[in-house]
Image (tube, rainbow over all chains, first blue to last red; front, side, top):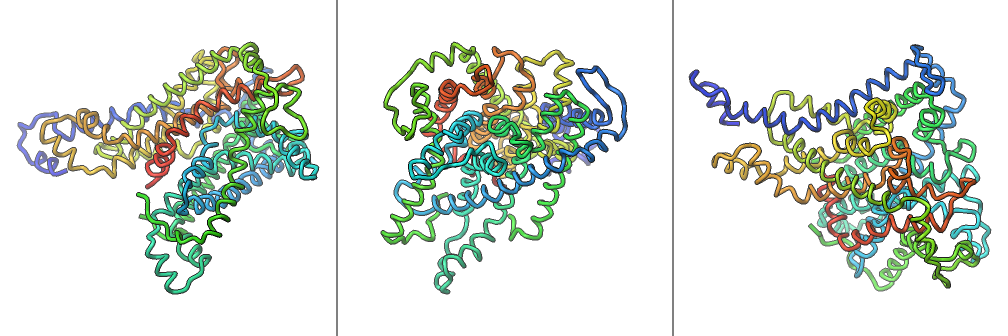
Length: 308
Length: 285
């Protein structure tokens, strides 16, 4: 700021409340609510999670004693852990692949110049504003053995499975329900990115005789790659937080096939009242989110075409 | 902002094919809502009828009375509404102030504080749910709405809003503010009289996703709230179960309809603001 330079060499009769001092005070006041909130509701809890994870703490038994790394050893040896991590990985991978490809397809479709296309845009986006639990309850109803989906399949002569009661279809159902709920958000982000691609590029490509597929992977994909990465990060981190869908649709079952990490954390801490162990699972969840986020930001440098 | 589409020269046949494809793809987005609303007004004997009745042949409105009889549903509806309203307004205030300061005001430690605040983006609220529960337990605020109000406004969920506001204010031309400064306006004056009125699109985006986030919250209510009169809607919906914990389908669907439909109607009327607001201000940059 130019004013700062001029006040610096002014003689000593300058007022204490200079422009930049007043500005700094205003700055601190402006960020104070957010900063206090982050300290109180993020940093202190994060420290407490670490502290709790070093203790055996059973509320029902009334015990809280320091056990060092015992909870971590217990977690590493937990026979449920491979299953839980496997379910989490399958869910996240399935969700990201299905969500992003469907979102891109929908974005390309609603980017076409067609009469009434905004109606379809509205339709694809609409589940985003439907209450998550309401949406999940309806799908729970639809996916029952004698529910709407199997009823419709029956009409065309197919006997559908009991979707939520066998491991592979239960996992697939949870993924599909979540994708249809939120794919509209990614579609809209892709749509904005597609509309930012200069149309001259396509025209030049067409003059050169490039096919639509070539245009898609040589022009569209590289130019929207920042958006692909952004949506990927949001979707992956979001997928690790999925809870309501599991709680309503499968309660982690059948067996443990849909028990993802957050659901396992909830069970251990709030159903079995093992808060120390729950805190240890929280640390694992935090570690996974941190590593994934970091890896993807690293990836950005190599894969993404350009960023403004 | 709407650019011409590069592939607009579609033959009539391609057009028909495209409409066909769009209609098929629309089914999983439209059908669940349709099925929810229609099933909620069918008599219980018809909701699993075969073949499925896409349009109800008989109506039974008593389910809707049932919704209010089994639980204090009106109270729960009010809980969700007022919590979402306070959280939305509070987040708009906290995030616009913090976002403005990070974008425009120079103060010692700004970068470091910004990094600390951004940590909130990296830490899903599920990670801190155990200590948060213990903290609110100690403060005697479990089974009150305070955790559902304070944590979203000041904690991790508002960081994304702050980030969005910061990106918006950074892009705002600085000349307007400098002129106001010469006229002797203080920082607060500049913020309230110049920057904030210009930030309406960004604030609208923040309002939309904050409202939806609060409206959808599920883990936090079931952790913090224990008595039905305090429940929020998502939590209440799952409580319509029989003695064997099996869902009472028609009641659940009626309650789900009452929960989902008003927001859906608002969305349909304001879909342009919703979609473009989220796309252009919400996540760019």
